[in-house]
Length: 363
Image 1 (cartoon, one colour):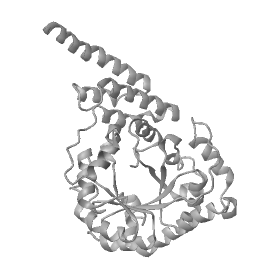
Image 2: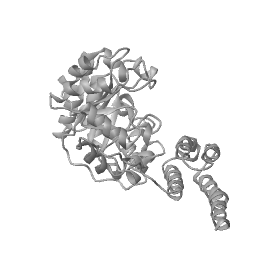
Image 3: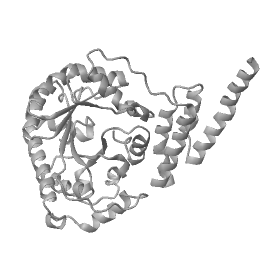
């Protein structure tokens, strides 16, 4: 999710939730190929996130070819092409979900990216394709902080995947997925809405199920996406649609625990009459400590003026406990991790102590 799944957020998800695979925010191929330090920001990651897939967007096959080399050089475990972003600025330029309207270009992009991954795996260097090594090294120095510089990754062919939607302004996912399958990606992920819908209404999982049959017959894995809010949602959607797995986005905001105990979901999906799964329960102390840890880690990656970007995450954590709304209103005004810690300590002293005193008095 653009503006959400930055390196700090993903690190917290990996630490507290441990999803099976993680995707970066989408990154513009122009920024990658021209060495923009700001444009490289979404590609910062740590080893705890593995397997970690770099998500790219754009519409120039030649730049996708070059960007694929960079993704290999940075040690990612996969390259995902975003053909589903509904943002007006992205789609109107012909990138993201805009590619649904240009299937021939979409296939050319996939072919170029796969060739780039193959050529890098076979030893071709960045200098061979006209990219400045110095720009990459500068970006890598920033991307890997504060973790130690990793060893140069072995050259291996990493998989290409695609994320898309049901269509542009109408549902054409069967025809569109048949087109994408010609590019032979390892995985096709489908969000159950059209571009026109943005994130309104309910995701159409019947359309996802129909497309899954088309795609899986080609030996390609299918992931479904849209309105997965709980473990039980995950089980029911996998069983009903026949997808190989699901992607979780908005439900993970302030809730990394949704990824915990994944074996429960796997076992339930193979059960014709799956039991109802309880949702992960965490103590208030654990939730508050994660807020402090998240804010502290964010500061270690970013300069002070960037802290307002952290506030929305703090707000998402503030739900499901007494006086959460008041806590949230204060958290979105914080300027540093120390402010966050102070608010937590104030809450614990005022509310938790009061409840303990009430229990003592009643006994």
